[in-house]
Image (cartoon, rainbow, N blue to C red; front, side):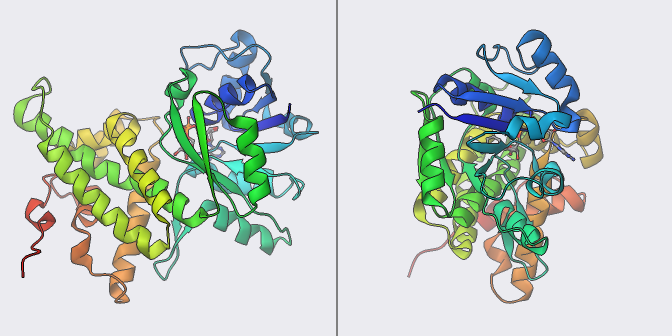
Length: 350
Ligand SMILES: NC(=O)c1ccc[n+]([C@@H]2O[C@H](COP(=O)([O-])OP(=O)(O)OC[C@H]3O[C@@H](n4cnc5c(N)ncnc54)[C@H](O)[C@@H]3O)[C@@H](O)[C@H]2O)c1
């Protein structure tokens, strides 16, 4: 069944979703945020996103944000493509004006920490903020290991759509699934959203080890994976503990671990982790990566803050989270990147 899908946010991920959406036989309208003006101009001119090597399928339509209301007219659902930095913009400029009956699927990965150490998902944040304006709406979300440029290349990809409205997420799955984009469905919104946000924070910790290897052996040193795997083990241990506290189910947890793998392997979080691991100061690393979206820094700080607060309240033991507290020390207290390896060991003897 042909549907009309409007994507708002023409960053890499929002734009990449135009591929399965269109190739599955739907009408696709890609709308830029006010920050995406040049991207949309380029798409209109060449049919290609400036950051992708392949053109969009012919037939995808492009809109500047001024025309977004036009672009959502008659749509079956809207995909929100903003990053963490656009969460409030999406709330105030789109969700606040969108018909509450229009299903929304968000790609944004992140968590917000409340004063009491609770970590809430963006769909929960949007729901609460909209209720204050008298608007009742659920937001559905996508989680899972998916890099945008690989999706563009039709690499086999496994994600999950989460939401409280089972009929809506099944409709969106049917609209979006292709021979290369495989979609699980779950009502575990907080679990999935927590898992795929935590992996950004923890990938940063693991990527430090790649920089440390470069520092010790040189960038061309070849195979050195012990330390990466050691940090990966500790990351999954801490993520699993936090996800248990978040009430995540097992499928959401393991999909988050899949996402951790792809995030360590490539992308922006890896880059900042490597620079810090190599011994660059936080400011030097930021300078080198100027203009790059670094939402892992936001989520790492929020998660660390939540852990410290939960520890103060006696809900967790700080010594169970040596990797995340170390990441926080590297980011905010000028600590060297070398990991506290001994604190990752366990003693399960009687
Ligand atoms: N769910 C998934 O499968 C999946 C996979 C990869 C990435 N992601 C997530 O998707 C989101 C977008 O990632 P990306 O790679 O497209 O990032 P990007 O930097 O390429 O694009 C960011 C988008 O957010 C918008 N934006 C940023 N700041 C804004 C602001 N202040 N006001 C309004 N709009 C703003 C930009 O205009 C752009 O449309 C991230 O949260 C990322 O973690 C999700």
